Amino acid sequence: MSLFDKYLTGWRFRTSRPALEVGREIDVFVAESNGTSGRAYIGDTELVVEGAGPETVEKQVRVRVTEFDETTASGRGELVAVVGESSYAE
Image 1 (cartoon, one colour):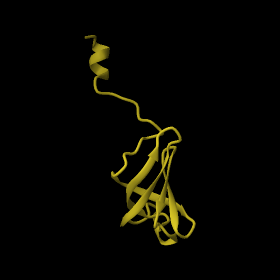
Image 2: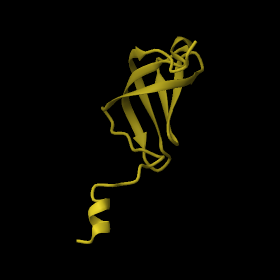
Image 3: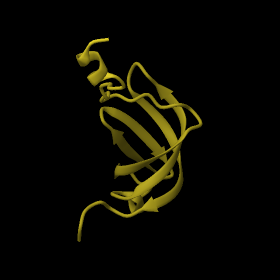
Image 4: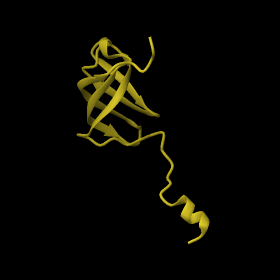
């Protein structure tokens, strides 16, 4: 093993289109809401969050993934709980 190989051991590139597993709970920030559902973006992946109303916009929420299409990097999930406030300082 070369010195270069040793240096790069364990390194990997992050993707801008992460795959999400159905049933998994993740924490995301809700970017927008249409009144009954919201949208969250994780890199280029889009997740529609059922139950995320206007009061959840710019808040960190826990979402249970209910469906996901890896080819379009889009999916749906259901709101579990609000877990944090906005990352913007007021």
